[in-house]
Length: 172
Image 1 (cartoon, rainbow, N blue to C red):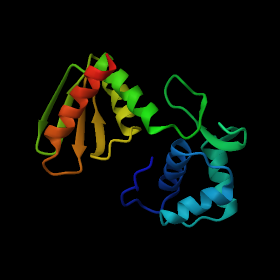
Image 2 (image 1 turned 45 degrees about the vertical axis):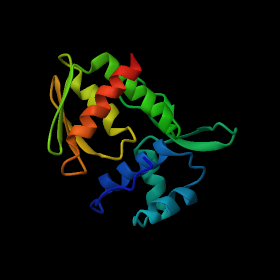
Image 3 (image 1 turned 180 degrees about the vertical axis):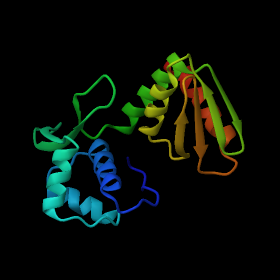
C-alpha cells in the first residue's frame, strides 16, 4: 500500500498486482495519475496497456469522499464491493478485530512468526495481514490453521509476534 514494493519482475501479472495495490492504497483520479505512480515505481506503461489492465482487473470508477470520480478495485473474499484507497487506521482496526476473533497463539523464531488460528481461518487472516500496513512484515504463507510470517528484520520475529498479540487484545 504505502510501502514501496520490493523487486518485482516486469510482467503483466506483476504490473496488474501493483495497479491493484495503488488503487487500494489511495484515491487515483485518472489514468495519467496512475501512470505517473507506476513510473515512480519504475514501471513504464503506455496508456493503451494501462487501459487494458484496468479492464482486466475489473477496476471501476466510483465517487470518492470529495465527490470526484476515482478508480476502485473490487474487494477480495466475500465483500466484492469496490474499494477506494483504504485508510491505514481502518486497515489496522480491521486486522485488530480479526486477530481478536481468530488468533490462538503467536510464536517467533528469528525472522519467522507462526500464528495459529481455528481450522479454516488461516488464509483469511493471512490475506488481512498481506493487505495491512505493517512495514516489518515481508509476507505470509497460510495453511489451514497456521500462518507463517517472514519479517524484514532478521531478528524481528519476537517484536512482530508481540504486535499481533497486542492487536488481538485491542480488537476484543
